[in-house]
Image (cartoon, one colour):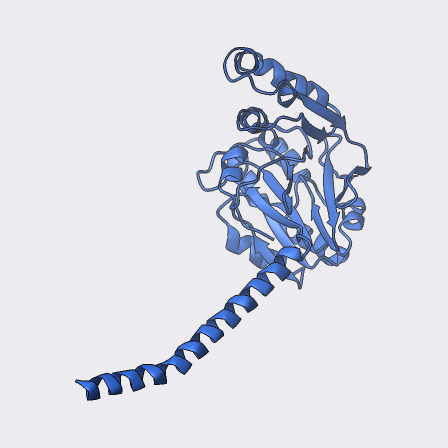
Length: 316
């Protein structure tokens, strides 16, 4: 019995240094992981773009309407608000807790139909400040129309049931002209005119923050102004269409010709990216939405950089 105890005691004593070494190693690893995490948390947030919707007017369950989010830490900016934008925002992880501003490239229906939902839902979910809305001439009428559309609901939720913040039921509309339209000291947003005639004015937007530049073309054909404003972009997000699509779906040749005139082919968008010296070209607002290979093949002949045919919720 004593012998067994002695052997057991010796065995236990021999394991003590191993246990101590293991504990020390675990502590060191834990300290290192904590230090790295603290270091990462201390780094300034990196601006990134998220494709909230890459679709077109025809409904597609895989692609929400035209919309792009720009994220910078807790800050959230949205460019265009096509159908389903609120649902796509809900899919982001972590889910955004605020909206700093919404920017509209133009007032075509497929770029704005999600705006009433975005306005109402974010208010119901806690937004207590006015929605800051930037866009071309006509944006003020759009804001007033949304408020009229939701007037009954706002009255009930603000005055009778939830007693929601009255300020959250307001929209501050800002008419955009070419130039800097937003600057909070960290993020600068520049609007630039694009050619989407007869839709006029129409704009693209350039976001600059912490050494990164993200440029969104909006709906347009190539112009020198677009190229100039996309110079050295880290990410150029550009609309795209295949000419044969309009020829196939539109029986009236004159209508097909007008539609083709104010959009950009893969070749044209790639040339814009090449002339601008963009690092990454991302296609969105895909016309049609199921020809990724054709779009990529045609664009790659005119741009030697990386090209991505976008899908909803891709991050860049």
